[in-house]
Amino acid sequence: MPSLDRRRFLRDTAATTALVTAGGLAAGVATPAHAATPAAAPTPTARRKGAVSFRWWGTAGWRVDIADRTVLVDPFLSRIDTGLFTGAFKTDTKLTVRADVIDPRVDRATTVLVTHTHWDHFMDVPYIAKRTGARVFGTLTAYHLGLAYGVPSTQLSPVKGGEVLDFGDHTVEVVGSLHSRNPSYSLAFPGVRVSQPAQPATIADLPEGDTLGYLLRVDGGPSVYFTGASDVAERNLTGLSPDVAMVALQNATTTGDYLPRLLAGLDYPKVVVPVHFDNFETALQNPPPVAPNDRTRLNDMIAAVRRISPRSRVLVPEYETAYHF
Image (cartoon, rainbow, N blue to C red; front, side, top):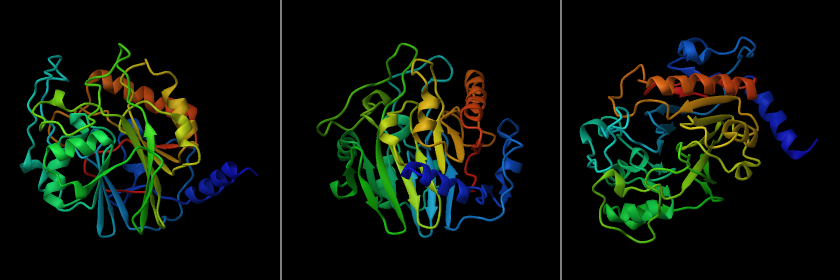
């Protein structure tokens, strides 16, 4: 059979024995009611190997612990109030890093993966990098913004897509991607930084700066694809075939066939985890707060995933809960 079909066959065969757990409970049992596992899902019989846990920090942020290493994806914990969810969005909102929120949660970090440099993805990264010594991977814009914050160049690694980074017990493949569009077919704070700017002061000083996705493969464990925005360059996904996909909620319908293209490009992952659906300007407390319009979009997304990829298990995460795939 063709190589892609063979990969999918082998992956699906292995995944039928995989157990998604949250704090020791099967996710199909413990997830919120709107994320209940379809009745047709197979009954797990064994766990995959690999000492790895995934904790959602809201928005597109994750903490991934792999043995004694910690990988962070878009860690945004300060959750400052910009008025975005109250209809009074202030583009001149000051960037205020909340060490009191970050420090108890970020005791260590080996690697930080940045999908793009909007404030709700990048704002806390320089503080975390300087506090932990973590190496930051992101676009050239992320590199120059890191320099602007005083992060040593030896901790900043610019990437553009196509790189496969080997960390011993896991690899990270960088994937070129796209940012979502608003109802006007545009996006907030477009642009890049091709040289070191002054240190950013407001959220408008942090542009999108191009967008990436990341595929994390853990030896003896799962392969997981992380998105940070709801658009996709599906031709860049060929052959990735992750077990799990962290999929950003679409905030407008101006991007055509987002979920069909994404799920097909990823070869219909066994587990789909919606992200970037919460009100990220509130405290990090469960249950995750969801604006009414976003609740409708989330429910529509869950229904669409089950229609497009009926074999996929949908897991709606809660904050800071350890999931094992």
